[in-house]
Image (cartoon, rainbow, N blue to C red; front, side):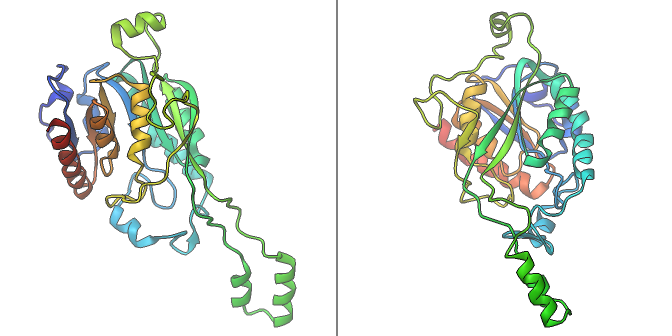
Length: 305
């Protein structure tokens, strides 16, 4: 697929705030980006659970995913160690590109399913990033644990054996506590010189805590509370714009360039525009990319009005 020459691969600064989402696999697009061109990477890659992998298909997933259930299993219960290995294998070459295109001292924030976050962190660390922290997006989820009573009752066991098993189970559920948060791996590209020298040259590597978007007036912490978005714009794992604005405001300066290689419904782009940053996103699904670009276009018109 030919890639048109645009601001993001020209190496030239922008004259005004812009936001672009390209319908392309980020693995094909990122090699066209100049070294040290991106100030912040904020992204939500495929989770590599329950079909949410590099073969992600939103339409198929919507048919399989119901509240609390994926296929015939409780959400999150379909698991094998191979999922983590595949996630790390997928992210490793991508993280190598992130390390190349990110400015020295620049931050990379990667959302991850909690039980696989360590694999994302390893991929980033192996690419040369420093793992600074693991943040937690705190929200109020729904309990998803399932009792096993109905399986026993549906079985062909004698009634007396069913009763014995039910008494022994005692109402116990699948091993899933109520979800109340999602991990965000915070990685940083190595600096050039001291913090001051790096900022003077690249304007990255330091954080702005003067006016956090969430809990304004309080020093930002590693646990960030933000409700899940009510509107998801067709995306299963959409993130709240408020949370993304909070992260962008802390970890980048105004008019810097933010990249989301897995742009989805465009929430990161909306947040970047609202925070006065330039934005570039890649989205592999054509329908989702079109929807995201239209959404960003609406916000861009408001910001420039």
